[in-house]
Image (cartoon, rainbow, N blue to C red; front, side):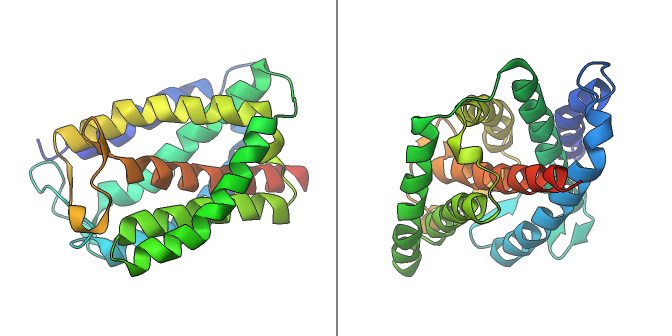
Length: 223
């Protein structure tokens, strides 16, 4: 069905949207910070997506509507809003149930992602453009966390967050790639997959969500 990608977007966002009004967490009261962070982050990712569509990946017209914005299905544009919104709800849920604790594992991850930036430039130059861009984006999120002093990469909760994002990615991205709604040119990636999901998709999604979460925390801190 041509509406499948749209329905998947709605499925992703429906639960968090309804649960935003839950009396204890009241995520609805934080929507203004969420929408600001999501919109700012969506802009460069939409440009990235538009520039590489039909090269790094393309979209199956059997599962998307014909309307396009900068060569992207409107459902793909919506993805950059529904997924981060659901992720921020997950982040607030984790924060609600788990107290703030320092984590050496998360701090070590920060340094590892920094090292990924020069590796990303190297791989990009070698033709593995998707892999390289993904590593640069991930490393940039770790740098922004330091620059904005949000300290996501110093919290135990980040490990739980990434674990939750991994599970969600396996479910929803697994559907997109198995159907397939999205198809890939392996020339620009390592060719390593977890099930039907290119390994780069995990880093791509993590970088998007981490950047949104860092901005979200910064906006809340200065409210």
